[in-house]
Image (cartoon, rainbow, N blue to C red; front, side, top):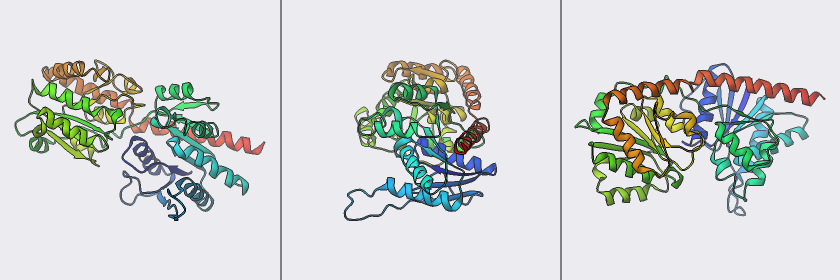
Length: 381
């Protein structure tokens, strides 16, 4: 089967999931074509059965912003036509669902039929997609897709609550490659970060307000008053400067490391003791899953899809986003009890195994075949 994958090529969850999905499908013999404006971050080196097609919008003086949507639609038509793709799988509804529909209509005018599957990832529904500037187009794109998936039950319900959806939504959760994410022996690395055996607390995100990184810093500050600790902040974004100022205000700069964007996130998780994720909204919580896979207990907010990933009292603790006192108390309870911390570590790995990539990829394969069968039948009527 030949599949076209459209995604954002960034470090964000939707791009990571789309890229890892394509890589795994290629390993299974699928011919996978990535179509986007830059090579995806997780797509490194030459890989068998994987092809990349770059979208280059024309920079013309008339355009204040190059029309990426039109350039992407034209590129999709070109790739589908000449690579003879069987299916398009677009990730993140904005603008990919509506662009997929446009490409499908252009191809139909030429006597060609290509089914389009849209995967909803979160903010394309709950935040950006719900804005009046985009909502009608998002709703249209979803309803005109031949198949729709969501990464969590919570996101599926949010979509049904916010839009008039006529298409059935199938939940296929995000996944983890346990061969890559595991707790390797990195004692020498840990020694470099915490030379005196301090606990290592970690957070990773895009540093936007919705992630509440300020509460990560405050939780760390509370824990550090009792136990010597180091905080690793991975990622970057608009809130970074504010977090740097907060660390100065709390006089903890010497124990906080701003590491920016990192490719080998598993190397850092392998030496961490706790992972903090107090987001206001998370449709799934891929960062939490990656931490669990590396046997790092997660203290997170009890919102969105996070309860589907983090089991409260088993592999972590769930609190309200602004309950910093509760998060501090939860962190101290683990760090003060080595046996409980070790139990939570083992449970974290067990929980991550529920989302192991080898269990989830077959769900996508089966869904592809069902959509192809359905659309093939429809086109013969």
